[in-house]
Image (cartoon, rainbow, N blue to C red; front, side):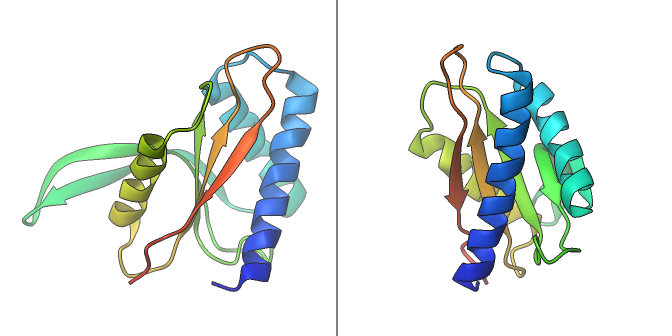
Length: 140
């Protein structure tokens, strides 16, 4: 993916998260921030944003379960030229295991299409600041 496009996506998402965080303050649930950021992105960019998106997990051609994705931004604007996954956490620190979880989501979303992902940590404490970690799609 073009690094300039990725920087733009990251900047737009960071701005939306910060705007929401500044308005709401710290200490809310992940879903509260998720819904507010989705609304902010729709209003500020015109993006098609879906929340709580269910994707099937298959094994040898049968469905064996599902995953629920926090947010999927469809590739319909210059800010988000390709499908983008955003996962929200409210933890002290983002761990490699959390990043691996998002990579698994990417694997199941569309293995032949590049998808970018961001892990947004809103932190559990009143002095928390949002943290955004970019996670690259492994690609085809």
